[in-house]
Amino acid sequence: MMAQNQPNYAPDENSVPEAIGFEGFVIEPARGRLLGRDGGEIAIRPKAFELLAVLAGAGGRPLGKAELLDRIWARVNVTEDSLFQAVKDARRAIDDGEGRLLRHIPRRGYLLDCRLSLVDSNAAPPAITHQDDRPSLAVLPFRPLGEAGHAYLAEGLVEEISIALSRFRWLIVIAHASAARSGAGDGEDVAAIGSRLGARYLVDGSFGCEGGSLLVRCRLIDAQSTRQIWQESFRAGRGEIVALYETMTGAIAAAMEPRLLKAEIDRVLRKGTGDLDAFDCYLRALPGYYARSRGGNASAIALLERALARDPHFVLARALLARCVATAIWLGAEQDYQFGKQRALELAREALTADRSDPQILALCGHLFSVLGGEHDEGRALLDLSLRLNPNSAEAWRLGAWVAVWSGEADLALSRAAEAERLDPLSPLQADLLAVRSAALFYAGRYDEA
Image 1 (cartoon, one colour):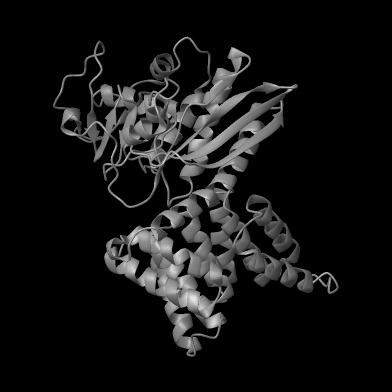
Image 2 (tube, rainbow, N blue to C red):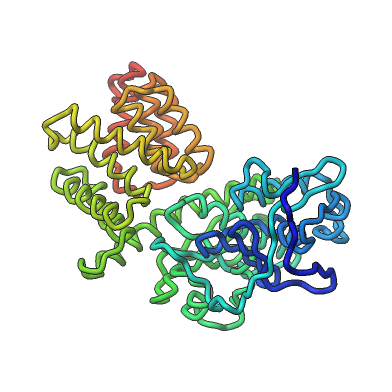
């Protein structure tokens, strides 16, 4: 049965409403923004956004496939597969995996099956704001190099980079549609662009052809200080476009994530200790987590407990605390093995119960279930899911290597360790990578190499 969709506005195909609310979400067609229930902007693909905008503007009326294809892909010949992909992406953006909100009615089409209402967009400040402590980042349009015909490739690459970075759930990625309307390239300084987008960090670059291959130059900028944090060039042959996007976006996201994390740690270490919020405490805990020393690990535990005292719903801090409690056992700092084991596994189970969608939480908890709890099947399944959700996380590949060792899959462990090192060759956990590689070689019977 369909919900009672009586909108408190009359849909008008000749005008575009500034903002429409539905189920706690707000879509702003003119601004190209989709806001979540917490007021933060949601990263969404352009065609998925257009689909939601068209359906919201229909006021609860089902729209057939032909009409949607005509309105979203006007004058472009595409198949229904493009529409199905847009539906899938839109449902993912509004956490509607079961299709309860964005419903398909057989022989009638698609609709937003909920109450729709006009929202006063002027009541909100023009700048994008975020209601949590995570750092925010925007990927700006890349400057074209050479042939103008490659502009669409550059736009697609920027969109894919935004999506790849959004898989790191500790980071807020400003929606591609908003970043594209930021005014970048008009001579405005990065501090002003960052302020208007509500982004602490900006990514920009260039895209073009050089010597028969595609060349991407990319850099990461601190928008507040205008300091350049990282810059790199990526080159690929003119092959199949999908393969190119996967290769390029994976490399860029994997290279950028540890630099962003280091910049955030450096930023919070410069702050006084009296005004730390929950995410600051989490960031301050990371050097101790990486140190693998009794003192560093004890400091990390204290900071993570402080983070949870400030925000009991900070699930990533809970998962990392579970890992640090386990590390205390392995370092000999926790004398009561059974107590430490029980606490670590309880924390991991609590984190997983609260959030099974964050790839980093899945990796941390899966590792503990396997290595500490002996629950190898569950640990393997969680790591496999983590790597499917975010194949650009060096930490997940490293933890997955340990899970493979404990599951008796030495060759898989070696390949995962190699991928972790490829993604983050300067990882602060190089010793751990050497250890898992040595363990895998030993169990494979390659004793001299181990």
